[in-house]
Amino acid sequence: MPIDPDDLSRTALVQLIPRQRYRTAARSDERFASFAPHCVRVAFQHMGAHPNLLLFCGPGQDVREAARLAASWAAANWQPSAVQRTVQPGVVAVHVAPAPALAAPGPVEGAAVPAVVWTVDAETGAVATPPGPRGGPSAGPIRAAARHLASGGAASPIGHLDYAERNVMLVRRSISFRQAPGIVGLLLAFLTFRQAMTVFGEVTAGRWLTVPRDGVLLLGLVGALLLAIDAGGLRSRLPGFSSARRWVPVLSWAGYVVVVVVAAALLGLLIPQGRRA
Image (cartoon, rainbow, N blue to C red; front, side, top):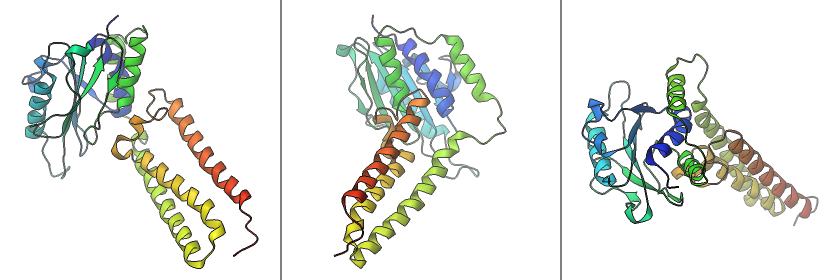
């Protein structure tokens, strides 16, 4: 059974709303009157330096024109202010249609702000998610929703979408988990710099036997730092780290740490440390 664009939008947004604090808008919303008629569903995230619009389009709809119109709206309405001095909006338009009717995935030429088209084959569930604008949606929930619906799973009902959005609108007094990647990134940057200085000291001092082990740890820290800051949307393209299920990324991180530590420990055992050249 072909994937319905609205089913995919609801199923993906149920995951995206709590993770990235998206809001949904009706197609009759006057703010988005220039491009909403070209879409099945519109969502937006307007906080911070990288606000963005997420559009879901179906067969027969001009997804690139919708993205260009949305980009023009974003450029005109999301401007720097005294509170947020730097603003770079973005647009991601998801086209859900049978393969012959799919638009070509990739950047949208002529858009006023960075915009990209993602595609979902309505018959097979195949997803193409070229790198999107900074601050845009994670591709993981889109991929997970497409796999789920293509395998015959039920779409998330509208009630689940409303519930997720109401929870996001609640005022929370605790620290937001969205701050964690920044804090972890700073810590990893410090550890990476410290490990790089260690390796540099070993090289300059001629302690070559310890370089392989500490070099593996340095590479592991560099990789962890890139994952933590999601450089170039790296997490959304890696299995495990892009999963919509919370425990899967946690296990992926744990497995990554174990692999790096075990590899360094094995090098330490294989290369005797007592004798030096």
